[in-house]
Amino acid sequence: MTRGWADLYAWQLDRVSRRPLTRQIYMQVRSAVLSGALRPGTRMPSSRAMASKLGVARASVVLAYEHLLAEGYVESRHGSGTFIAGDLTGLASRRRGAPRATKRAMPTSAQTFSDFERSALQSDARPFNTGRTLIDARTAETWRSLTHRAVRRLGANDLGYTDPAGLAELRENICDYLRAARAVRCDPEQIVITAGTQQASTSQSVCCSRPATRCGSRIPVIR
Image (cartoon, rainbow, N blue to C red; front, side, top):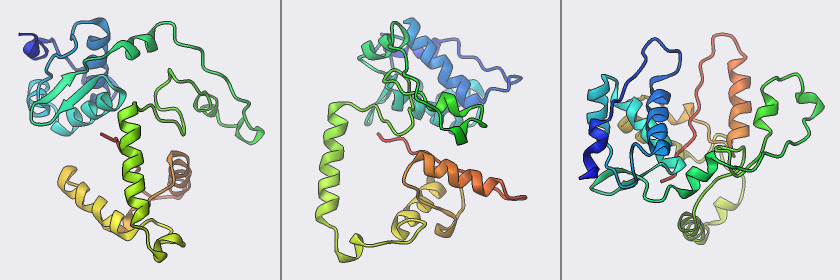
């Protein structure tokens, strides 16, 4: 009977707060999980039901659920819905007695940026470390299998330089996804594939430093 308890939880949003609605939803679910108010195996409301209950766009709930899924607080079961993760041991230890992050020396050229020091910290207990990913053994094995399959299909044209903006086929597929899942209309020429978060952030900073220029970035969530 515990599977429906999340529907009865007192979900609330502060519409006056400067904190984005997606972030508020994410923080409420995470706090409820860590406090034990929502126990492992509890079924979460569907994104549509949650959006209706909170009076927000469904996209805000979807993004919050994606963040929770990426961090391991919830798990998606095909055809059944979204549930509080069954194993929360690692998440709880992240909050209590987590090892201190080791501080790296900051380059002299970066000392003028006040926020750079925080981004230079590295720790297994800290989510979204630059250049690091927290994955389980099953996910790692899936990546190995997919990588080997992709390498076996490489041809002569794949071993040289490609379009600086990224593979045309990949950018076309991203356009199709954005139109279907995010209602964003764009062309492949407007999308640039980078080698990672740092390159993407640098490129975005350069673009945004120009007057009257709009740009955006997206970090994919791997399921």
